Length: 299
Image (cartoon, rainbow, N blue to C red):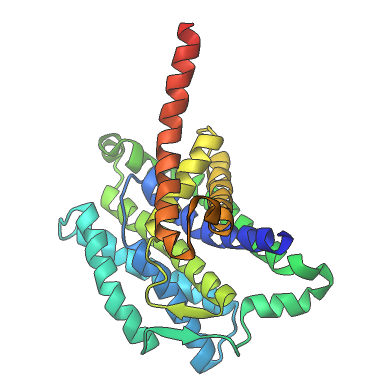
């Protein structure tokens, strides 16, 4: 049970980096971006290719994956801002294109990293004194580092312009800010974070698969919604902290549901059903709580 919880925490924080990217587009920029289902795999594919065929340093491939994801996000942003394609359709088109691009990168539907020195294996060996929590400590440091970097970025002048673009595009245009540039920048950074998460998850799991990004937008939104429900704040630092907490809780719920779901008839093949039910629960929970509070006040 202890090992199961450690793995759940590790996965929750690893996927939490992708959730931070989705938070940037969904909450900050108000840009429903489906590119993430493809850019997550792009990060995993590039990391696996560079590690298995070219012997790159496993830490450097995380940075390269971020750049590749940012490039994909830039294309999505340009499709919307320059070619005037709707936000949703821009993301869908880029996600579809990335499926073929990811297959081209890997050369096959999946790549194995079982005999490769990945970042998690190196950390596990170097920090062996920490025992079974060595990888958890590393992923926690990385996730918190990404969180604080995003906090700092959103507090800069550029970050404030990005936030204002999502809050009131008309107002920020009146201040002389090019909102199209802000949109492209925001989507690029978001997909960079998602690809970084994909590269980390691929090294953690020991493989990259062309279908591993399916549902990234769902799990990311679940983390954002759960975090926003638990930590209600308009301060950026608390909002990003809530995203990571939400991601961990979501992953714990999935693991526990699949582990003990047999009691109510769940099977391992019901993974998508379980995740969808958890997202529905996260969406309706705030509404149910508000109704309850109104009834209490009425009494």
